[in-house]
Image 1 (cartoon, one colour):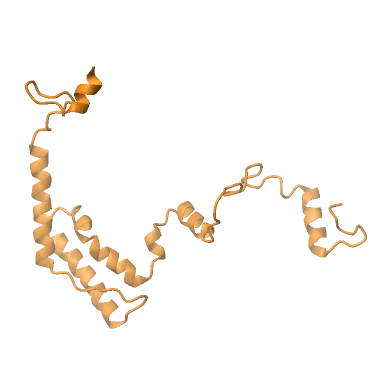
Image 2: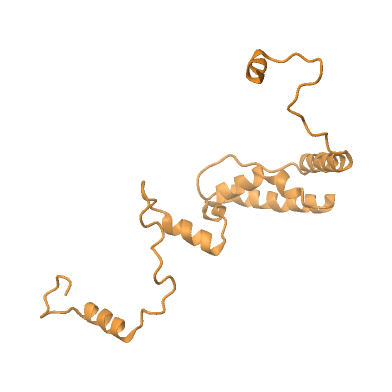
Length: 166
């Protein structure tokens, strides 16, 4: 045996031995594959199981943040969020929905204290219009000509370029 007194077998050991003899462990997923992270050199990440769960389930890492940090991150990314909206009415509705959550948080704060304030809908809409115009202008303008590495005729080359060209 494996160092265990053959005269005594605990109930757990007996149950495991019987399950192995019946073949209960033969069809387990991952059989024959190395354990995740086995043989890795370096410090052990104590949150490996959380990271694995989030990755397996497709949950964004932001979901694990406290509510105050989630809200702050959403406020910081408001311009990126509203770029996908096609009309001003939808932008204003989204800003109002976010502002209602800000007010709720201010009434009943949870998590670490971070600076949070209500959004000005007019400012967000103005930035949304400006970003929309930039995207339209970029779509209308032709692509710039590709840059060449060769110097223009008549231009002065640096001494390193002259030295390496010899």
